[in-house]
Image (cartoon, one colour):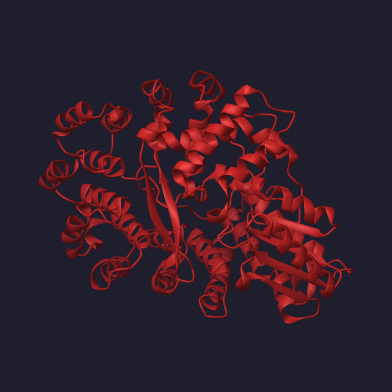
Length: 560
């Protein structure tokens, strides 16, 4: 490996600027959102200038996240230097790879090719909405007789790293220089270090999403070349067909194309729906989407009467989607729109407890979405949220490390008076455990925020040791930030490892403590409605059996 050439070929400064956006939907978010690196990016890079590429010396952790079925999905936690390098590789290759991908691929496309240094996926949610909306538009065409919906099974886990490198070389043929070859070889080295015997990519990271699309490029070309009306978002694939026979041919062609790369479809997620069937109609139904759009317009206008009237409709749909017949994604969408309405001080305060009453049972029924449930319960929390923590952390502890991590995050955000006393002894026990370093780290931050100075000193004495991981040591330094003698401990920590310099500087210079709390802001109703921006009704679907157009939810809103 030519380290000098590789170093010149990677733009670490741009990669650091992308990292906060890439980390927004991490499985195991950093306690303070990597604010220290955002605050001092140049110092972070320059301090490690001569060893940034010494990747073998940096840790990565293998954790697990529950699936809907109760099975576990591997989730690799990467050291921030690894993440920056991964993003730097993406920055080097993205524009040329993206230009060669099929237009029928919607996920993680570069949105600002004219400004290659700016974050490339600002319109990611808009593209996700377009994926669904364009599919609905095609399905509503009078020539459509059937649709195929399917999903690639264990997509990221089955990617063969060597084949990915070949795919990148093939796409970039004629557009590469020596620096590009070094970068692709380096990417292979990173992925093999994080994967298993040459297979797999880390989930939930922007670079993985792009390189995953690259891996399916030949499949996309084959399906498009066969003149199917083909739509793909990551591993979610849809085909609009003239009739059931064509949909079956598309399914078989897709199976063969994927099998060539040792990839397979998820049987339980593969369906063909014919026009006129109840399933076809439900698939294209947008009644809920129209209501969500109305709710967003109402929160922009800010009129009390309108908001309270809509809250009743939203609660009805929330109750429906909490049932076995409901859709979990829409449950989350309605819950969040109700919390948006509850942000208005003048609106009935009973909205939040009613939302919480639907959310808390889902900690048992839908543990794979615990990050959403914890965030919702942190919105104007009440005693029920504290009681739920006791149940799932002490009385009958969750079997999922990932769920416990997010419950400790929730506990960190609660006011002290809502926290059951039993949680403190439990957190002390968990902080010393090595079963999950991320769970231990979050329990440490919880103790740092809510305990006394003696407990904080003991955290440092017990846990800031060379035997504990980077993520635990980092949590300890965050936990002692309100300790009067913190500078003494910070100096000791830097003598052990100067890599914490930016974190110590960030925490020392702040005028207030940072435990990663992001409280919702209070809003006030308007006497006169705020004007809406010019609205284009791009959304299309069926409402009460008839084709309607509507305003897609706003660009800056996650559908959920």
